[in-house]
Image (cartoon, rainbow, N blue to C red; front, side, top):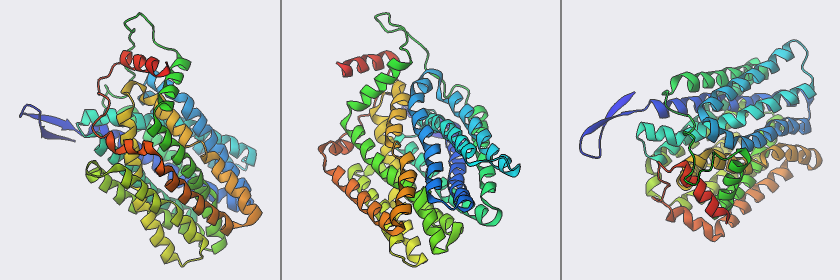
Length: 445
């Protein structure tokens, strides 16, 4: 799709939406598959084993490789380019996901083997998700779309996946069983691989040309690239504060979605269809919030919107499930929660893309995401053990209290003021790799 837009000199130029549209389409199908699996896999483990602890262990074995491999892949994405990383890892995820129902049908799927397979899925998903995220600013440049709008649209895609995925996943599990959801997950990953490999413009998603610095240095090796990304992240107080806060909330969210909601659905008698309905209602509201963020985020004070969004997105979900409220009230709370959540990722994405030099985006984004996601593998594990020890309601109340305190106390730190001050101070699009290495050396002194 193309359209004519005014050029800076008063003439018209052609804007093509194919680059950004291709990246967003690949994100849409792979994220939708992940959301379907997020219902199908925990329900499969819960109904076959009857154990909340084993359900949490499966989540731990998927997310630990996701976080670790994603962190280590950043320098490779910068070096070889996000395009090839994306389509190859999506293909690997599709293969591993398809093996699970196949082995179960052949009566060859033991629980230890299931743990190995979900670990492979997580290890492949991490680099694939990272590569697509890294291509968003480049796709925005190609499509001549403002960065905040592009990150807002990627947020919309994520929220749409969180709407469609749970609805489809819940329906598939209720009607055809959880393994059908895993088959659909594999198909979605395969589709994402094809889109990235074949649908994007040929000049997009490749690594920058290798050059030598003015003092004759060759391209830095893997560990030096890794260290440059870590140094940059450590020296940016705002990015570090975001990572710490999001890391805690991600742990709580992982506990909520992978263990607490399935256990609540089973104990309350609502079943997997209720999980899908709750997720879809929240996802639809989050999609609306992301659309609003894409349209008006550049006019709002980021800090106020950010913390207001977290206020609605976090603690109320835990507390409403602990209160034994009617299903209609539960759905209403999830709608307000989703609306607040829809504003969060577009703001986080815009802050990241503005502050990080483009040649370092892969490694810094990988480290930031991995640190922010480091608690996710533990979320399900801790929640499963806690529910087995003290019951569901006390764990829900404790989780809601921790969410509220984390998102309110963190906001009192002074570095959050930079979220509003930095608007319009983005890194120049054409900053060279030489400039990046010079910046990294200055930061480390």
